[in-house]
Length: 273
Image (cartoon, rainbow, N blue to C red; front, side):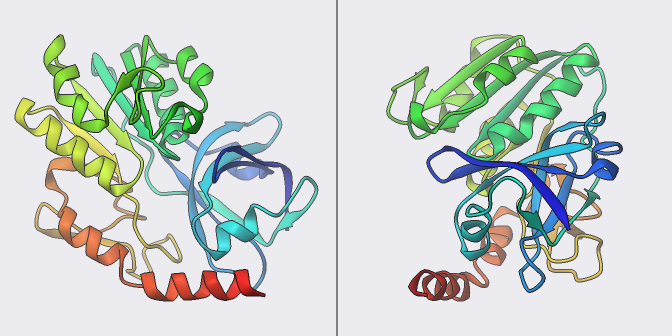
């Protein structure tokens, strides 16, 4: 059983949870994730480790309330427990001295890019962080990102903060100055796909952290398989980070919808109880 130290909503439908998991906190690296179960009969869901404190033995993850499990997770409070938290899983993000790097996040990705931007900054890179949201009230962790970024750019759909628009603005941002040496994107699959389309004409190396269906997280089940550069890969052990320009985005989108009707039915049943 894993003790919850904090679990709260930070913006509508997006929550942050901090748990006591010293073994994970002592070994996790930027870009890795953990898999948790709310209770013994619950499903296993992967969440990126967005921050950690090795001395205190804590890890922090951000999640979106979209289904039965995350709705149930959001009801837990301090001193409640989770059945399991397993990690760190997946490969760390490649961190090196690339030069100029743009880190892009949307939704839960605003938090997921934080440890990556931090590691890149510590390596000596010039880091620009870009976060996107429907409106200013959907943005969070801006102050944290400022501490690890040379520049923070905010994009909102309604123009309530920063630049008005969406990730389609990326092309104009790239064209406005010296192109970056690398772009790293984390968020929903649509955000990552659109970012990949924007960087392709500039031939900028673009890395995405794929959001796939996943069960065990150790390469045993094959549920997280994706096609990258015409080859089958497992997001959990081969990734979750891949070259965005080599991902078969259409196939990934179809696989994400495989159990959509069952997920909706389960959620409706749980809300009716």
